[in-house]
Length: 490
Image 1 (tube, rainbow, N blue to C red):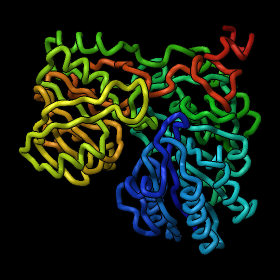
Image 2: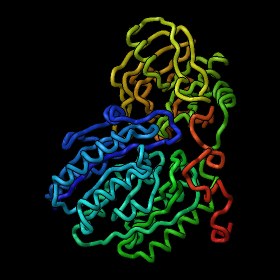
Image 3: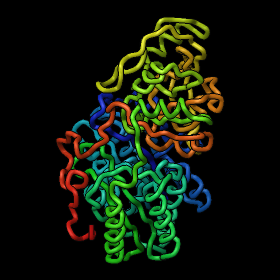
Image 4: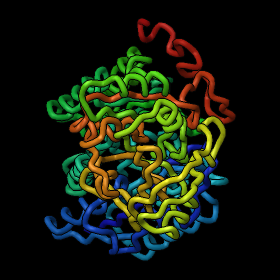
């Protein structure tokens, strides 16, 4: 067997002021054919898992380009077209192939392309024809469109949020690919539109129990090849935005359709109960300062670079400074210009510095002060599961007893190694402020005495009922209370 694999991925917050060009892909991951490292990034696990499958089976794996940009706003048109055509050219050169296995995100939007993954998959199908297997692994924070379904044979999405299972789901995808190519199964996809948009952390019920149920069903029913909840991405202003239930069966389309509907309506019946309780910055800082055990983690959950924001909001920092907080560390505030100034000054320098809150309104105010440059790290990285996440040239500064990490490559706070690589022992602090909605949970929960989910400012469109969408549909919850009518019994 000859199988082509590649990855082209990012997550587009269409409300973000930060556009993505080729440099953004190169800053996060750009690996030409054969140069992908042994460890996967979030959307490139099909490549690294595929290497092992190819060796085991004695098949030929033809690797194309693998590239990923950290989430932000609109992708530059020429950048998308150039990277797309690079991958498509590699596919053409690899022909004939028996299958195409891709690593995608599912929420990319480029200038002139509302459905970039649909565009890419359609072009792949045109190249390989109707009889070649086309498969992809995707992030659940994405848009499942009719165009994508028409072009591909099988999709598998991460089940966990935080996305700790991207390698496991790549293995699931490859199992289906192998079984299909060897004639044991015929994957058929069934989709139910849940007609809702929400946030679904699997670190707590009810989503934890729902995902556990899906995995039991996969294990117990031979007809079911894969079950995925496509969460949707509320910061993507596109026509097919929303939550979908995807069932992949072994040539049992009618059964899959019924099951997708049942599970989708069950998910809908729990609407509004998934996301963690949130408090504002005043309450978060007050509770953290009053805590009796440490560290207390304050998650600045909506200033999340993983959702496409800048990650430069200062609302919580300003509240900490106003309350005289010490023994506190903040990771991170994105400010490439401030990082350059700190690098020029050097470690040990004390300098006047203005930093933060430069990207958008309602993210606080730039902070001014005399800071100590404690540590400079070039090309800094933190752990994220089995992979490493870069956060660029970074500076550890100290202001009024608060340790602050400034970074030049936007990245959410995945792991406590974010602090340790900058010379900060996270377990020695009373308060840790991080920027992440839920990906942080798997690692930070191991060291936190308490986690406070803080909604501070409005860097992210987190209330779909009030978001000023121009392209997204308005016939889903919470824009309307019950778009399914009596179907749910609600």
